[in-house]
Image 1 (spheres, rainbow, N blue to C red):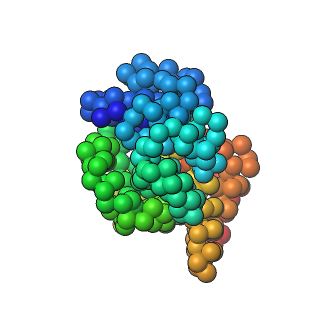
Image 2 (cartoon, one colour):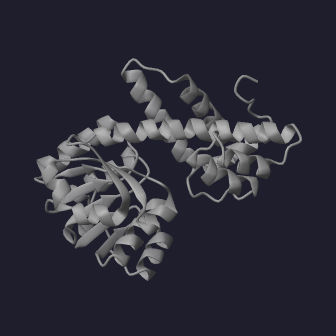
Image 3 (spheres, one colour):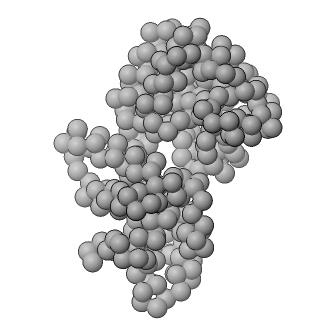
Length: 293
């Protein structure tokens, strides 16, 4: 199958390379030349506009940062919606209302939108072992079942209504942010108590305090490796969207609010482009107090 991937970042590049490995023809577009060159070396064809990508594929995957970028891909000059109809799969983490709006736009052109946010990071994207949350029409799901199987180790069918998968993803990311801040605070506190933070992380990883995101982030954060596999500013954006979603429903998450405050502080102190695990440094510097401290 010919597939398009727009947004060749940490996740999009892995998706493109995985699809090439699985024998698909892959056409890509990114605003940055370096990731386009990397994708081309992997066997992808670089095209000049989103519309050109749409014309060359049977399924268009969008893996950009936010709703403004999705809007530009779909509706901007040379956008996807100026091309013949093609099903669109959005893997970005967005507000549910934005996904619903994009679904209406795509359907008005005679195609379907697959609300398909993913979780797991660049390595899992490359290996085809992401978790994928899916909300779309049944016909679209069946039409692209083989591609979904190539990309995800587990696919969770949320509903047939685009926007619902976005809701699930935001709740997941809210919890992930809470876990990450709590894990960073725990390690920094242990360090101040004279404990070896690496040993402490190993104990937590094998015990009841374990969480996937701290297992993934904290070992490299402890090594001072803050190269972004998951950007601080992106998780900050996701938590903001999650809390806005809850507020609109008359709900609150005090732990989520505390986590968001931590990530906002990290972004304001020069860590926005760092890996989100670098939040550990704020607790080490006492720029953030541990919860309750």
